[in-house]
Image 1 (cartoon, rainbow, N blue to C red):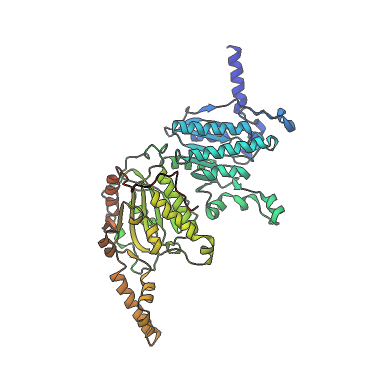
Image 2 (image 1 turned 45 degrees about the vertical axis):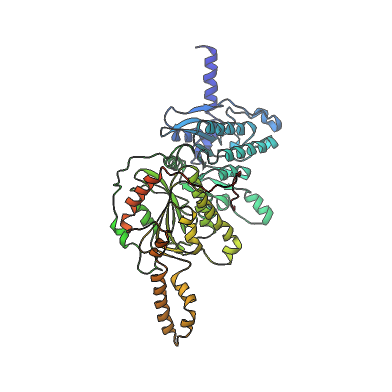
Length: 520
């Protein structure tokens, strides 16, 4: 064999070891996979073409001339995942803790550019101690370049971040700019400033997981869309998520053959809504009975639980699901639920995914915390997102649809293409009881006893519900396209979805603009 070939093989073997065998063993001792092991789990067999395997940093300060590894702490390349092209970036913690320097960053930027040029999703496996302090401003420049290209890729190709280790300081903003963040429960965390800085600045004692662990971001901040027990489950979630997404904004989502009858009627839906309008039920029952069997994949499950969002399939077609959850705080819209819905609607619209909205919403959550926190601004995001979306938008009102929240949840007035209501729907400015209190206040004030007042209130409430708060009034105005039997929701939605797949937007002529100004 020629000596040049031998040298190549030696260089490859050296690159495969990253920061060396001891560092690899240390990674395994923490229950974590290495960057290359994660890639091997993710990509199809023999599909990965590595880019810049032999890249090295050029820093010499603080002994960096003696600390060199081929690849510079990140593995990048193009591959196939379940038969579809994908660009993969995996930070290698075995070399200098996966820290980011000039060359490390340039590899990531080149990968994002490849993804844009070939129209393939980006999967970024984060496991890094942060900026490489020995490289100073070159490391900071590297982060800036990555953020810039994350933004250029936004809405063009799907971007998925897996947080499989530390992600701190400026590093957190790349995942934040991507579409989905998956965090591993054990050993992964995200925060701007670490526990030491927090203690020094404000005296608060907190560890890394309490400050920015997977459960914190899944339940409290909303930064984590999905959480996994370990690296293997995280990779499995990436694959499942990709199965619902198109490769880029010019493609349609992948359709699969459905074994679920498109004409299937679920008669249990007819009795799902309680007779007492204040009694809760689970919207998951509606979603799972209407969609193709076992196709619902929820996003942001643990955050802002008054709303439900996720992907599903109708007769094999991918759809985005947005719903209120009457089983949790009656399904009100609050600050977090508004952000959750608006972000998801905008993603679906970016990637040609039709939106199905199930509505049971009594209004916006009242109180000073919400008002002072900006519920007006956050609620406006939902209005903006639905109004801007041009994908097919189908809405089903199952029960309550009151006030501004009725308008926000995919109504005809915000461009809903097909709006149906169940016979149990209540559509009004406010709840019937509250409306009766206002309209018949004088009559109620004349009641001689509390019992008489309550009896009158029930009478007036029923009158308001019969005359105003029912779906037939809205249907008479054309605001509701159809009042349907709950059991026929699935076949009707499938037919309307298939008709609307050829939808062409008819817009009023407006002056040219760069873009709108969403109330962020």
